[in-house]
Length: 341
Ligand code: WQD
Image (tube, rainbow, N blue to C red):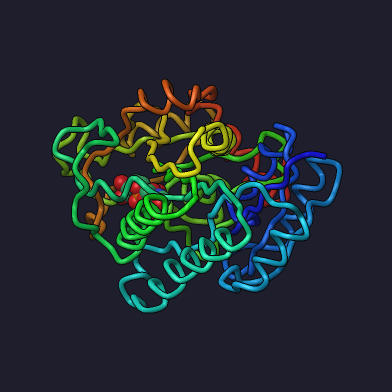
C-alpha cells in the first residue's frame, strides 16, 4: 500500500505539480482544495498524466473534524500544506482575511495532525521572508527582514508557529522557502492558471506572446542592477515539486519525533527581467513586445538563493534549465490558447 500524503491546495499551481511528483515517487496523494483560487479542470489534467483519479475533497482545509476524518480514513503519514491566499497586493487590502485564512488553517491543520498522530509536515514558505537582502545570494541563515506585505508576514509568522509547535509536541516539520516558480509539466496537461491579469512575470510574458496582452510592461528599468531591471531566481515548477518529495522523505527519516528546519528552493542563479524576456524570445522563437514602465511598489531589487543546504541535506538539486521552463510555459500557454503546435 503506497503511503498516503494529504496535499492541501493540491489543485493549485505548485500543489498540482507536487501531486504528480508524489505519485511518481510511489506515494498516494490525497487533495483537499476549496477551489477558491484553482480550477476543477486541474484534476482532469492530473488524471491524464497519472492515468487515475486522485481523491479530492473540495473543502476548506480549516475544518478540524474533517481533517481528522481524512487522516483516519486514509492513514495519512504526512501533509504538504500549500493552501493559503497569496496575492501580495490583496493582502494589504484584506489583512484580517489573510491572517485568519493563512494562519487559522495552519493552526487547525497542526491541531488535527497532533490529535491523529500524523508525524510529518511540509510547509509552503517563501523567499519573501528575506525582504530586500543586502548581499544576495541568501542562505537560510540570512537575517529575516520585516515583511514587505501581510502575505509575506503570514509566511514569517507561519514558520515561527511551526517551529514552536515542533519544540513542544511530537511533530517533524520543514519550511520550504520558494523563490520564483515558473514553467509547467512538459505534457502541457497542468500549468499555471492565473485568474484575470497575471501578477507574475512569466504568465504575463506567455499571454503577451500569445497575443492575449498587447505588450509586457517591465516594472522599472532604473534599478541598481547591470541592466536596470530586477533580478530573481526562477526555478522550474517540476524541480520545486520534486524538492517537496525529498523534504518529506528527509523529515520522515528523522529519528526524533520532533524536528524543524528551513530550506531554500531556488536554482541558485539570478536573472534580470530583461534577460528573461530576451531568453524567452530566443528559446521560444517568438518576439515579445514590451516597454519599460514605472517601478512596482514593494518589489525587491535583487534576490536569488544559495542552495547548498538543500543540496547537501535534502540530496536535491534542480535538474531543469530556465530555457526548459520557458519552453514548458510556452507549450502550456499554446494549449490554453487552443493553438498548440
Ligand atoms: C518578478 C519580476 C517584477 C510582472 C513572486 C510571488 C511571491 C513569492 C516570490 C511565493 C519582478 C517583474 C512582473 C510584470 C514585470 N512567491 N514583473 N512585469 O514579485 O518576485 O514574487 O515570487 O511566495 O508570492 O509573487 O514575482 O513574477 O510578480 O515578478 O516587470 O508584468 O518581474 O517587477 O521584478 P515576485 P513576479
